[in-house]
Image 1 (cartoon, rainbow, N blue to C red):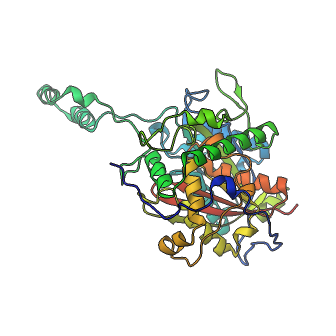
Image 2 (cartoon, one colour):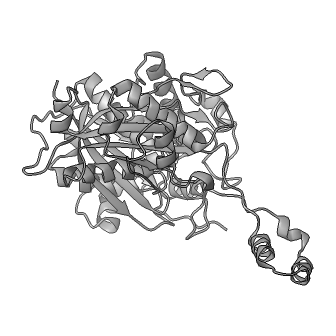
Length: 460
């Protein structure tokens, strides 16, 4: 029996109406620079093509992809390796042989063994944590030049022996006599051989994220059709952006023994009719979350060059954007697992002294269509703001014409540890292309956590 958390949202606008509700854009000319705090800039960022797991990257290891992103960044920016003070990468499902994948990738990409590197994990906002850790190191004066990134290889995840088998093997290794070994072997049972398979589930609730997304969609009265419509929008916009060469952060990667990969391979615009034929993926038979309106398991890596503004200018760089205020939030991992953007957005806007109308480019992580649309409904509800957020008025709805205009995680892919950098680069590149000033990046993450950040375009 699945518990459905309900909110009074039956009469809120549907996704098809959202795009019509906001059209006025308020331009502001102020900058978010703060006195006595160093400006932190993004010089540039790259990523490998994001690929469906089990395709061209399936025989690689995570550090291979991370190394490719670092190499691509070095080629794109021509930054001398010895100038980089520190390297930080995010990852979620770690390869045990390279647990500090940042260090192994850095050595493989030719960085000095004197350059420190560490790996962070914060579920789907691991790369966000890598970036903001770098921002803190620069703002505090500890470093001038940081490379931040992330990587995930879902084609090969650790599969363990059962706990009983592991214990037996460890005890056998410690046994000092043949008698002890035979005694231990006599305790072996065939069910010890059943492996422990990894699952994208919450440790605290034992619930998969897909189940949480289905319950969230039901709680906010998000229909299957709305979810499919949103997913189709994501894929259509991603295909358009890809065809028009707007996904300029993608760098080619020659896969050893295979062809050179040049573009994301999960972008597949379909039709509502085809999508409607798919069966529910998690809550059966009545769920609304399907393979078509969920992000897919993805392999990929990203990397960004972050500097103190004065250092970047001294080296002759023209930065793309400032990294400004950011905020991390945390909620109940059962009923509010995926609502991080709703909670983080007003906090980061208030911290920066901005309103929703000041934002020119929104880049939100799309874990599921239902997750995005539930966040929209929560953000557009005074009732939710009062009863769950302790706010007198609602957050406000991101105008759809400014939202994820070049596609999102549903279509481009979602390597857990790498998506944060993709979001920031998409915001920075969109601001430059569209002439906007402020971008807002937001994402949910396992554990009921979330992140939001303000990106400010660098003056041309």
